Amino acid sequence: MSLEIYEINTLNWLNELSIKHGKKINLNNIPDNEIKDIQDLGFNAVWLMGVWQRSPKALEINKNDPIFMSEVNTLLPKDRLAHLVGSAYSIKDYSLNPVLGVWQDLLDFKKLLNERNIKLILDFVPNHVALDHVWTKKYPEYFIKATDEVAASQSNNFTNIEGHNYALGRDPHYEPWVDVVQLNAFSENLRHEAASVLKNISSVADGVRCDMAMLFLNQIFSSTWGKLAGDIPNTEYWQSVISEVREVCPELIFIAEAYWHSGEKLVSLGFNYVYDKDFYDCLWSENYDFLRLYLSRPLSEQHSSLRFIENHDEPRAASHVFKVHRMAAAILVTTPGAHLFYHGQLSGKKIKMPVQLSMDSKENKNKKVSSFYRELFVAKENVGDPSNRFELLLIEPQYEDVLCWRWEYNESVFITAVNYNNRLQNFRVDLIKKPRKAELIFSTSKKIRRLVELNDDGLWISLAPHQVIILKINLYL
Image (cartoon, rainbow, N blue to C red; front, side, top):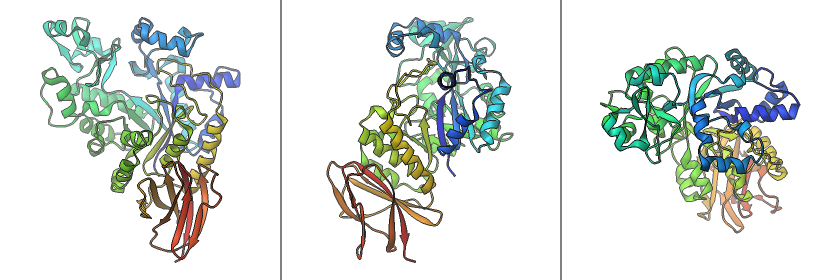
């Protein structure tokens, strides 16, 4: 069974629970019914985002950034400084943020989840650490460094710590991140250190989500840093690190945040799942022709996809037009791979909050969105994992704006049909065996009274504009 992940911004969630229950809620006293609610929604993994110690220096940088503070002032007109806590990805130390408790509390929370068959996923950031991380003083060989001459000529790209000109962390397509320093993927000592960190994390987690994992691929890292990185090693960073970790933690799940079509490479190096940004882009750009080609790929390639329509880096799904949002969500849950949902998505939150804040947006629950997700998740539970014998289906006539696929679960056949056009579509689904009965499991719209018809020609479906349906099909043997 693939992962069904519920991503939680930890500090925001605990603040929300504290308000809801009228007392201070931390990792050591989360009410059992809150975990049960997550389990009842069908999630088998929780990603607690932002549990590690955050950087005080990064916090000061945020406070002195007028553009960032202007955004914060808009999002949190009151008590903004009380909830400004620094970036979750400018990590000072891979120990639990004291605000959340102690290491044992994290271990106990994992046990609480595991008792309900839910895995715990935590963050690992390979590319960079905070300016005040202990490594900057103890292990300068872990970092990308430059001579005084080079650093002076590129002052926006470097910072001096303890006499060393460290490069600021970066994605090569953007300006450097001013609150972190760049680690060197080619450093053999760093690779062993990273493996040690991951082994320690594995004592309190079932898996790790590795931030911007593709940046540490040899080819990408070399093209980004050139001579500053040194000679390209014979092995890939992830090949070295994952193999060392799995010698003692063979079951640890590795999830890569990755872009630029690097997924296949990362899976070959040991990752279990890789972000599927192409899937995300197809849905929100409504490029369903590409989605059709994308879902036609071998199932073996799709099993390792982590698919989502929202996370902490992307705009809220509910900020999109509702009919498109519904389509995207229904498509998501009935395609192969792992699926991720972000806290607040199911209640229809529209405001994306920076990861430097410990308070979520104060929005009322969107009843229309939450009702839709309740129905969708009931259907999701009934149709099972869509990875089993998943295949796209032919339809007649062959409309370019209709998609249809099938899979099997508990000896039943299920079909998802999608109409992403602005007009009514009537079409026949080409099944190898003649259908005996078709049961409607879910629909995003109630506008058409007669959705499905069985006759001598087989299965006919009528869909309203932007409608998605899920059917259970009984076939003649």
